[in-house]
Length: 113
Length: 113
Image (cartoon, rainbow over all chains, first blue to last red):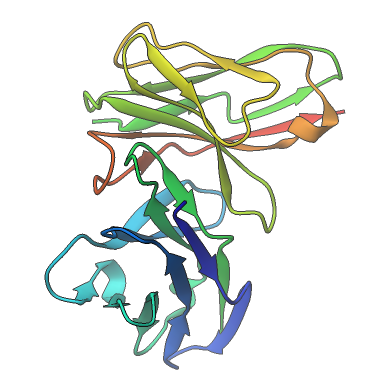
């Protein structure tokens, strides 16, 4: 079965510093990968997704992620974070049948002034 | 478009009571989902539907029921509420499975005491 592991439950970082949120997946078939963001007291919204093609994927709000097949990773990065990036971030992968998403446990990004 | 709407936003139930969480989408999406979110546990899929009249269990279906009589609506029924059902519930929809983005509602915060 497809699964994702988010290696850090919390990541504190100072404003304007770079950040990387880590996600590893397990899959034996072709992979689609997603990052969703959840701002406080809101639902999730799509940040970016990898379906095929270029391994570097750009998303909203200056975030990007790199698909690395050999390391089975899909880490999320931003070169300079803002206070407004404080949120929970979820990595997700569809199951083999493609009829549901499996989410990682989430990483809480805390941006400090 | 309103997207995915959920009612109510908050609810407190006593043990043994029943209730229905409402979910409506206006994007003509085929797929709809119900998730629960517990702190530090990510999102767990309760039930999903791939079209009107078709529903199936997710990871954690016990204690819940769903129906999908129309494309737009996907209510979640809790029978005999238990404290373990205290959670935040999210409804989502997507045009199709696999690589298609899921759109989330704002959530319902349920407390069972």
